[in-house]
Length: 95
Image (cartoon, one colour):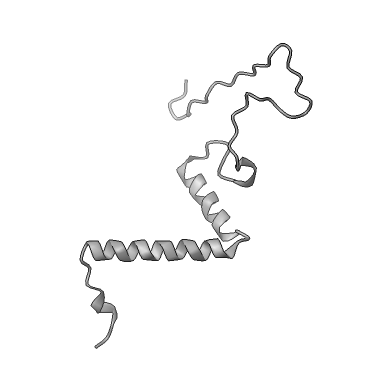
């Protein structure tokens, strides 16, 4: 048992006795709905690897409206946060 290795989950390949799959895959396989569209799902790459994949997905996204909407949401949340901590926004405006 290595100190720096992460432990892998056990995988069992259970197939029922009278089940005919006919190329549809196992009905017992747990799979998320959008796994084939995401790059962040799969091997455990660590926090940095997942973050890099998420940024790459954001940069190469085909739908530009999502990026714009995301930046607007982040800006609104940032302004709400600055309002909560009573940050003086008047330093950005000249008198």
